[in-house]
Length: 380
Image (cartoon, rainbow, N blue to C red; front, side, top):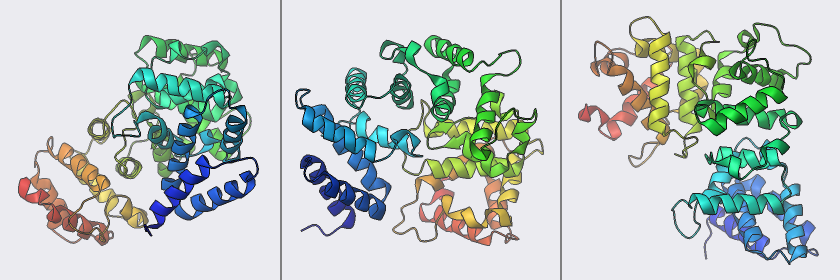
């Protein structure tokens, strides 16, 4: 008998979806919500995988069963409002459940189209699924004329965060023009990257009316990092970043946000994690003019502002020599900047081993411990 709480909950969720009836619906919904509240995201994403599988395998003639699935999907709350909905979609739709292989584009497109029809999703929601799963031939699958971008500005904000990084593709450029026209954005006065920032501020502060000309300056470093880098988006193109005052502290916040949002090693865009690290490192080189960007960033981390977020990168409780994805990314970032520093990789020794830090000693100690466990220092 499997007594592991997660395995038990996943099996229970699978059984709930398989045995769902009109008679037991309320009881099963209550049990589903209880399991998700107790176990969390891992249980939730399995629920959507089982639900989507059930929908796709149910004959269209079985309207009673499909209506129950539609009701369950609705009663679970708006999927598109969930902060982690991209990871849910990736897990539930992109992979062949009998293996670890990605499904091909043709099958993925069919899955999205069938689900959208059954769940009665809007064209904007359907488009969002295609874009968030990096399926950029969406113009063949979605009636773009029926996408009402004004109807859901939060979803439009997410779309922009994904589309702006691949705007060189013809169909993406055309879609961005369509969004610009519907939102009545004059490209001569305000580009889409500015709108992306302004709409984020509106959403965060519930402001009404026109934004001040210097709206981006009202965001603090944590808000900027949360907007530019999260599970659903990675926005470090020059048009956006130039609108902020890029400091060593902001660079450190961006680094922590990147490492923290990629802890499950899931590819969140058309870029790999290596490419995201490279882009962030290049931003730091471009905007930090002190001569040694890594030194400036580490100095910012050695402050009280970072004491409560150390575990986003490293954790002293890591056992068995296994190092987290977040620390691997942090190390890769450091090495990337060291490669263009006049002191080379020896800069890491100076920064972490030469003297005890003033404030964030815990981070310094855990860095030394983590790098020693996997012999990173020996390799360099």
